[in-house]
Image 1 (cartoon, one colour):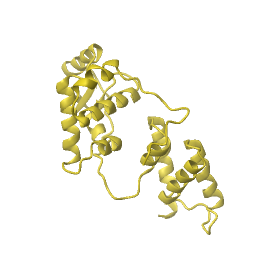
Image 2 (spheres, rainbow, N blue to C red):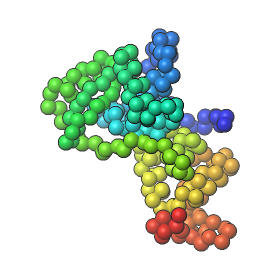
Image 3 (cartoon, rainbow, N blue to C red):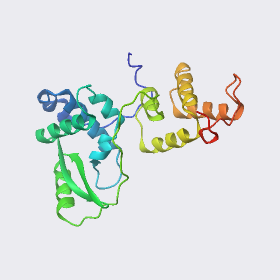
Image 4 (cartoon, helix red, strand yellow):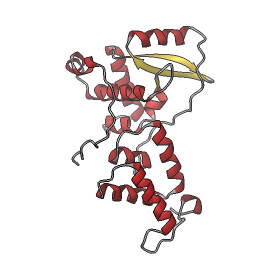
Length: 222
């Protein structure tokens, strides 16, 4: 399927210049390149200090899982191998830190500031708040979830938008969500506000072909 093109208000992610120069020449493994770009994106999406991405978050990343899929090795093996190559090359740095009640491996860009931060986290009692545990992503034959629909049809998923999508997924049945995205794409209205209004209208007025409103997951509709 051909890419539909970038929407008018597409967001941009800053990428260090060497990625498009010497690193692009040196990286000869596509999985390493994909993983490196996804880590850069994930770090840019973070807020606060220190800024890092955990191994569990990367293992739970649907986009990364799909990007590295090869059908021959387990998902965790592919992700960890790609990360190991990036660390060995020196694009990103990694270390084990204490998060909550256990240890977690974290990844940062290999900049002077991030190297110093990683050393401080590893060698001092710097307090880091416990993070939510991410379950490894598993590919299935089930219908796509709302996050996949958003990324495929609207654009990059931000943490704030992810919260809105989770709420919608708890209210509306999966077929409604898929059809709402499909209608928005057909009308060339690739934004969540338009899709949400479709769902709200269907809940209030029904789908227009024999289904009444208020058919939500909580009401037992599947």
